[in-house]
Image (cartoon, rainbow, N blue to C red; front, side, top):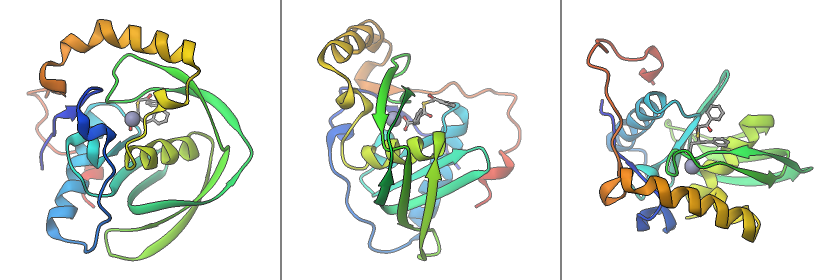
Amino acid sequence: MSILDIRVLGDPVLREDTTPVAAITDELRTLARDLFETMHLAKGIGLAAPQVGRSERMAVVEVDAHRLVIINPEVVHTEGKDKAEEGCLSIPDVYGDVERPAKVRVRATDLEGKEFEVDADGLFARCLQHEIDHLHGKLFLDYLSVLKRRSALAKWGKEKDKYPGFIRKLDIDPSRTHEHPDEEL
Ligand code: K1U
Ligand code: ZN
């Protein structure tokens, strides 16, 4: 398993649409494991393939007991509205309040190639929507008002030089001697 570099705002890959997954392969299973491992190290609750420079329509989400690989996901039902702060592993140290549907039903395929539906609310619903947006080149910044977006981009202007080539390298703790048990898919 590998810790992957995370692409940050400015890398064109974050604005591209992804390609639907046609078949579950060993390469896809490895990518899922690497996404979880990278997400855990970055202390995130989700991570989408484009954030590590990949074009597959796949993301991982882990919020409390909800741990999912979502392949070709679609939001098929929404209810209500909710506003809360979001961050993004591809825009470190920048935050903004985003209004989204409060509850969602997502249809997706799992790593066995089986289609499933999941109902979500709270942070789980928010994270699913955030990751599905990544799979279509959309970022939380796109939901902010002009003023809030300008202020978020000004903050990013001060941060971005830390990421030459739009690459965020995660620090690997040399004392890590064993894998996170959750990495066993
Ligand atoms: O896709 C990503 O960039 C991961 C992102 C997902 C996300 C965060 C907040 C709301 C919706 C989706 C993160 O995990 S950023 C880390 C973070 O903000 C966070 C971490 C733990 C709990 C809550 C938020
Ligand atoms: Zn994000």
